[in-house]
Amino acid sequence: MFFIDDILKIFIPTTVTFCVGIILSIFLSHYLYKYQMWKKKSGKRDPSGAATPIFDELHKNKEVGTPKMGGVVIWLSAFLTIASLWFLARLLPFGVWQKLDLLSRNQTWIPLCTLLLGGFVGLIDDFLEVKGNGDYVAGGLSLKKRLFLVALISLGVALWFYFKLEVWSVGIPLYGELYLGWLFIPFFVIVTIGLYSGGVIDGLDGLAGGIFSIIFFAYAVIAFYQNQINLAAFCAVIVGGLLAFLWFNIPPARFYMSETGSMALTITLAVVAFMTDSLSEGHGISALPIIAFPLIATSLSDVIQLSSKKWRGGKKIFLVAPIHHHFEAKGWPSYKVTMRFWVIGVMFATIGMIIALIR
Image (cartoon, rainbow, N blue to C red; front, side):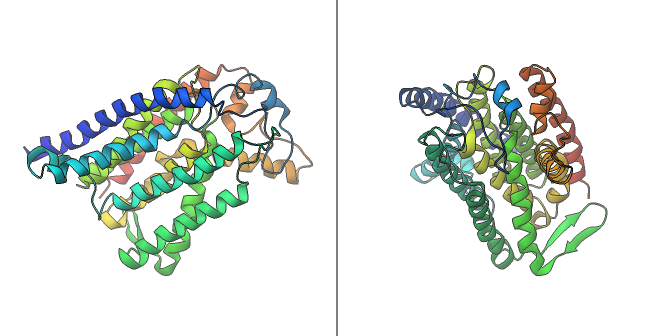
């Protein structure tokens, strides 16, 4: 009976979030198109400031005319669902409503706060970009500023884990706990920044939405196995919001996830990974590089490309980075790149779940 209740606690909020996300998408889409919330000029610059002619040619007809800020659907639908269930549990303090309330101090307060904070900061960046002056770098927050804000948010959460929750170690499969002491704090920040860099996967219709759905589903399963039912429901609710977003983001995309979605999801993923680690006698961090392999591979392809251009006299490893654009430049249709990434994501997520659940 309790097992069925736990399943319903995950399934019902996820379904509600999906429905809320679909409704939000309709209104948001109208607003974004009415006020032309898209880049005024296609193309971009790489992190070193150099031009990206191959990318610009591939996407010359895609970036202009399609709004950004679609990621609002993900975090806002999740927040509205969680907040509504919390309110109903207090308005009707009995039976099913109390069971469906997934907001708890020990499991979901921190990831929900990081989701909203990341979404808000990313929304500011998106707004500044679409209201920019039309240059390639259109006035959004600079990379240094975004990295600083991500580091600041993650530092605050790391201090909470270290001092309030007394988390000083990470779990290693078949070994036990690896004690880090105060080094846990910078380690937490580095992991978060590393995941945030993987947000560059948001580059093809449906790609980021599908990959993040797979990743958060994997951590929902891990949290459920650890009997962190509220955290499992939280991850599943995010999946519900992602699926609603994906409904409108599959080719041709109605809108893009952009920074408000990718920042919210990546820093929240870091928190979830640590909450399924030594805090719950699990291995959420050891499994993270595998479950989030598509994000890490995408980020590393950027690092490899920039390093090669810097140290090898401008020579490139990939036709264009991140790596999904390399395959696109080689002639793969964008939908084929996206679906193959999904397949890879499912494979690695499955392996990662097995590793995370090893005792």
